[in-house]
Amino acid sequence: MKRIAVLMLVLMLLVGGVLIVEAARSALSVQSVTRSALTAAYTQIPTDGYKFTNDGATILHLKNSSGSTKYITVTTPLTVDGLAVSDLTLTITSTSEVFLGPFPTTTYNQQSGSDKNMVYLNVDTTDASMTVAALTF
Image 1: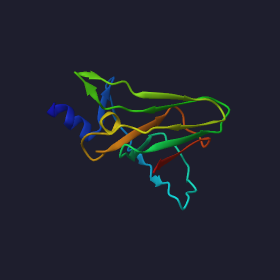
Image 2: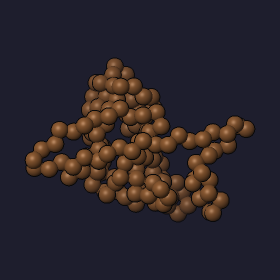
Image 3: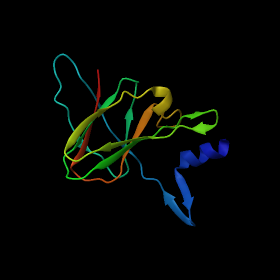
């Protein structure tokens, strides 16, 4: 267990004899929706993915303005009875918008380390046509 924690902290992985260093995730700001209104700010999902603070009430608004389907993955670090819970993968068809969430903290939040209470979000390919806003109420 200690060995796994050390490997996660260093964020390094040895694959096929080649040392790969995982890129740092970008932080996605969570925006509050209030009675005084919110004009949400949308940002492109970077290649290395996003992380955002989650209190269990955060939702994502994802927009795909491209002509092709995109795949979003929200990672689940949870294990139950020694079995890993599968990541949540969502298909976003071309020129569509979806809302996703909320994300239960025990299932989706990182449970330790510098990213504790953060959720990880990945996209299969990046381009300016796939944008996201993280919202809370």
